[in-house]
Amino acid sequence: MSNAPRILIVDDDHGQRSLLELFLRGQGYATQSAASGEAALRLLAEEPFSMIISDVRMPGMSGLETLRRVRQTHPALPVLLVTAFADIRTAVTAMRDGAVNYLAKPIDLDELIASVRLATGSRSEIARPEKSERAAPPGIVTHSPLMQAVLRDAAVIAPSESRVLITGESGVGKEVVADLIHAWSPRAAGPLVKVNCAAIPENLLESELFGHEKGAFTGATQARVGRFEEANRGTVFLDEIGELPLPLQAKLLRVVQDGSFRRIGASRDQKTDARVLAATNRDLEAEIAAGRFREDLFYRLNVMEIHLPPLRERPEDILPLATFFIEQFSRQQPRFSASVTARLNRYSWPGNVRELRNAMERAALLSRGEIILPEHLPTRILSATAETKSTELPDVHRLEEIEREAILKALQKNHFNRTETAKELAISRRALTYKLQRLREQGVPVDPVDDSAGGTN
Image 1 (cartoon, rainbow, N blue to C red):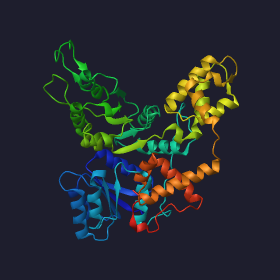
Image 2 (cartoon, rainbow, N blue to C red):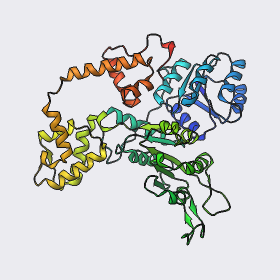
Image 3 (cartoon, one colour):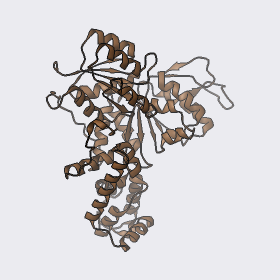
Image 4 (cartoon, rainbow, N blue to C red):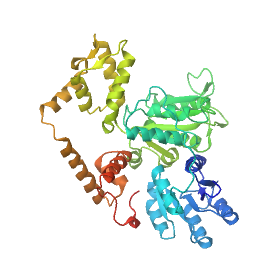
């Protein structure tokens, strides 16, 4: 480890710094961090580094000014910028000042390590420590490479203090991932406090989050402790964060930034040491554009994003999950008829894992023997799969060819920008990365000819 490249991480956000340090140390690099550009320049004057990773938006000296100052004293030192999407034009301009690349928030760890290896000239020669694999607890069933990648990301993120935004459609299992991050974190012995922002009336939500004093409003007959206070030294999970009213978003921003909050009716602030995890099925960037969600709160919550793919993007998980659920709900050990297996695989599962679980609970109640038959499934599944069956299904190879052509066309159209390509194809960026990897293994050209042109962010 003494000969490993030394990386200086510059960010005013403690959670972001701890995440990057933990991840890069796990990859075999030596790291040191600074909370400001000024502190980074002082360290750089005292110690040698192989690379700098700097946030763009920081109080005091910005990442761009830090870059310019570094260039004056260390013209050959690689500097990697980390930027919000709104800053990308600025970051691209900064590359003319000498930045080797930029990464858009939330950071994709695969892209991060690829950029670090390229900038430091390191590959397999770094002595990587043995990685301790965390076993998924009972109830986590997955054969899908996409979901296994999600679990690996959760294991990397969990030991840090980083805030995490968990995204995905309703029913994909966002709460399960929040449970895992808490259970795998140093805060596991502390409380995990959950708040469903969509299930609590707006006029009660502030009291629910921050508490109130006796007599603060009509009906407040006694003082109440809020969820952030309950979560001290633990984790608070804010589900359906996209439903939070704008006035409360400003108050949430304050507690997310520095842990400060005030009970309703109180005259003094309080502090809480609670790690914040949030989840949403909404497109928060679209909500920001529509004026329904604060941009500053979004970037504070979205230090690291974990996106859960819908069940239709991970068909390898359908039958294992169905088997797990049916065994949970049945006293026997039922098996699926061939027709049921085919229908489960053909259905698109718009309600995702939650819908599959409910379907298996129904099937277990209705079946009297050891075999689950089509009539035990919900009518919507039978109707949807009957329509599919009535039409001639395309050849599998033809479907793969159509998908390949669509991916290549979208890549070319978006100049090999994976984020925009994934949006156009209406799939997650993780799913696109997985599909590109498979195509690359088949010898299909999916990368730009001139790597220096960039465009893979």
